[in-house]
Length: 259
Image 1 (cartoon, one colour):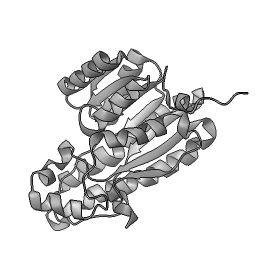
Image 2 (image 1 turned 180 degrees about the vertical axis):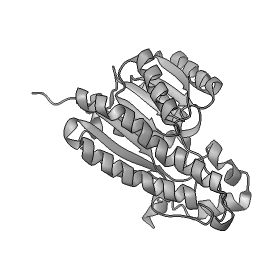
Image 3 (image 1 turned 120 degrees about the vertical axis):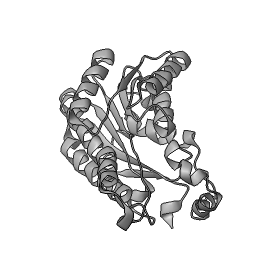
Image 4 (image 1 turned 90 degrees about the horizontal axis):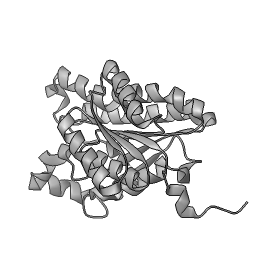
């Protein structure tokens, strides 16, 4: 049998994807990249208007179907409704990108319990809830891609990041466990662990020159990541190009964690 053109391995024609937290930042550029590769995409976040704006941009610029859904992915009822709405609009989902995330920065002794709970719920519980909904169907069909957004804080940390670092470390444990459970069924589960990117979540750092420069000093490449620089990794993990890759994490961090 003739070998496929390598570029064909990255095509997502006919695939259906869901990106949580897909209306802005890394989630938005990932959703656009998946659509550019041929996938139809559902965009989810808690703000419907922002999801609609991103979905319209995808439809206009790529010609792919894009559906906007408002949901709180930390709530199991919302997640069940989200999956029903996404699959009702697009068909059975093949790709799940668990991107939704929040952060609150404070020393542990000042961290409010409600903030701890919210960060753990959105960053760790939500990927579990979303994956739990989709894994049975993916395994039954014999193909699926789950991509969890970890962080450099999955394996290193900074002061004031206790719940975020705990949640993102948990994402790696969840990724490995789900990968083992799905490995023989055509479903891969991997993580992308970004370093500093200019996202909405990082505005407090971007707007503080001292903190911004402190971060730059830790990055061997000497700069923050640009949003588009995560898309190649996402497309690789979402496609047949990564068919023998599961249970691992790829660090897109300018060399931070290599030190």
